[in-house]
Length: 390
Image 1 (cartoon, one colour):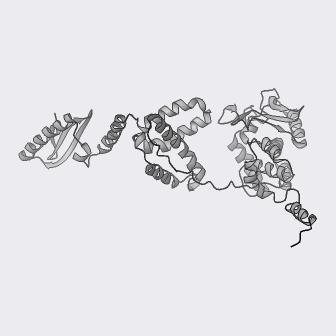
Image 2: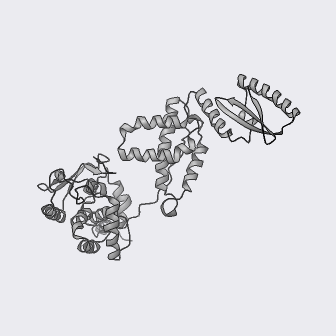
Image 3: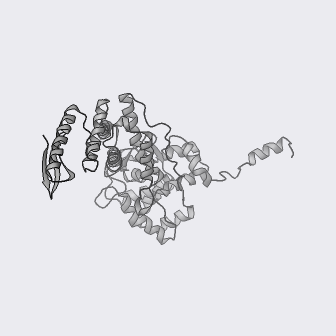
């Protein structure tokens, strides 16, 4: 039964609702008449609670407990419909999917859930999340500032939205209701900024780079390996006999893991420069056992991306007065040089670990306007041979 008490000559109600103790301010002065009115109110409220007709938020709209009971009402509606709350289903989905993911991907998804999805959708029933709420959420994260105060990138927005799409589609499938994810397209991602180096620039960089990183950057520039692949390369996977680098693993977040896709699992041909520099590099190394890393710290541990970039890469660019760009541009450089040399696109795609040549033509072709000095000329010669005149 509710009780009435007074604080600073104002009447309060003390009662329990849905297992939670509630102490609510009435705003009424402490008079005999007001106490009699509140006793009658309490009797009606108790009857409504027993019959399941009591609406806390309507009765006490200014209470700080309204948010709690509002969320609780959503949960109850959810369970009546046989659907769990988003937070409950998202955690279940996360546990079920972990077996399919690498540690790095699992950490990424966990971060997205904790920082973005759960704070927004936690108490909502999965079947009550509408398309409008999804679009509103996307608009809200689009205005978030990222590193350096810059707006969050389109690519990052899509990465955040992907787990939400997967969770909602899976819930709709399991609980047999229409998915709200209809006609929601990914945010258009601008073309990748390609800033390849020219051969003279590469030559200058290899001449000026620290001697202990000369072999490292020679391999980066002339194989197109990703940082994680190069840092995870061991001597076991350097085949001098067949002049191949066997890319079977990568070093990601302090863990040696298999390459990301079947296409990434590949054999990369060593050019003469790469073969020679690796041969010399091995002779100067103290750690050359099969499982030793080809490029490592003094203690034998794999190199760390950010450390190499900040201590070697960016200082080198500044020394040579070259425009700053990310280390990944070495991979773009390799691709454009191979294309410019007239190598087969299919071979280049295999060397880079692409599943097809589509990315080559979409991303790199504009940097090779004339692969063989014959752009359009073959067609012109055919027309002339047939004697067709304008």
